[in-house]
Structure formats: C-alpha cells, structure tokens
Image (cartoon, rainbow, N blue to C red; front, side, top):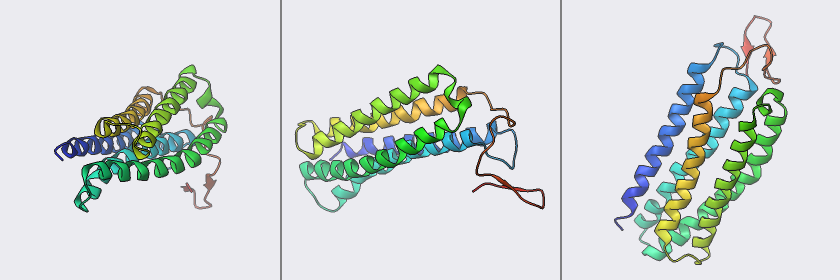
Length: 190
C-alpha cells in the first residue's frame, strides 16, 4: 500500500504543530514560575488536538504491518480512531468549555467563540469520516481517512494560529486558581 507513505507526512506535521505550539507558549510567557489558566488551556488544547493526529496517522501502518489486507486496514484503523476520538471528545469538550468559562478574559474576544465553533465542526467532520470508513459506508477509504486526519490537522492549525496571534495576558487578571504560593516564595503549579 503505497498510500501509507503519505500518512507519515501527516504524523510529522502533527508533531511539528505540537512541538512549535509548546515553544510558542513558553516563549510568550511573562513569568517563569507561574502558568496562567489560559496558557494551560491553550497548550492542553493544542496537545489534545495535535497528538491524536500523529497517532491516528500511524495506526494504518501498524495494522498493515500486522498482515491485514487493504480494506481491513482502513476499517480496523478507523474503528480505533472512532473509539479514541469519541472518548477524547467526551472528556475534552466539557473540560475545555469549563476552563474557558472559568477564565472570563478568554471569552471576551469574538474570535474565541468562532474558533470553538470551527474546531467543533472539524471534530464532527473527522469523527463522521472515521465512522463512515468503520461502517464500510465510504468506498474511497484512504481518501476519507486522509481527509479526517486533515480535518484534525486543520483544527490544530487554527489553535496554533490563535496561540501565535494572541497577546500575552496580564498576570494580575489571569491567575491560575489552582496555583498555591509556597512559604519559601516559590509558586507550584499542579
């Protein structure tokens, strides 16, 4: 299956997004000791969206290496992706929504709601494509699988661009509620 080579490129792109996102978040920080709740939410969001793309891109390669035929490779891979992406969505969307609501400054820009809507739509597209492959509804399995990965990668790109274009938060407004001062003067982030 020569089409599997393209999946490694997708995995590399996803890892690059996650890596660059981490670098950008660290370089944009105002203080070395305290992570704001918004910085935590943005980095967590980028990792939750980017890393599954890398893993999902490598699943068909592993399944193919196990000796399955081409139709089975896509169905098995898509089934794994549907289950994993479903679990990620069920745990992440409510958690991320609660995190945004706990940070009043994060919800002020209209772009935040637009970004949330775009990423939710891309999530639904990816999940639908994986489900279509797993249920054998879609005939062009590689194209659908690659498109689902591309939808997830576009979601990573939107979050990455948001991180690049956002201004650093004022520390006095954006403190992390879970941060507790240490008697020795250090700040620990849980």
